Length: 132
Image 1 (tube, rainbow, N blue to C red):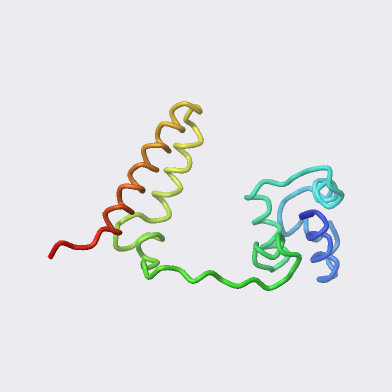
Image 2: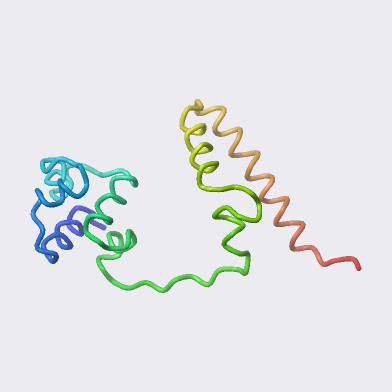
């Protein structure tokens, strides 16, 4: 998978120059050149900027423009994950990500292992047949 090549192809297809991409993303033209030529690997946040500037869904940078099947998700309800019925909104998620980024590796691994155990316990409870 060559992200830089995909960015170049989408940019050329839309008849945009690297300068146009610079104005749309705020990323320097020379940075876009380094990405397109494979000298730099952009972060996920930077890839989001490129996708927005090129007016394409982010996944298309990884699939060379091919359509992909969307997975069939369990009937969980979007509100449970995007903020809504459980009271966790985008602001809380952003604050959690920020706190995680400030933790040292040891504390982050400890927190993530606790979260994994809680998730496994929750899955186990849901998979048990009810005793009613």
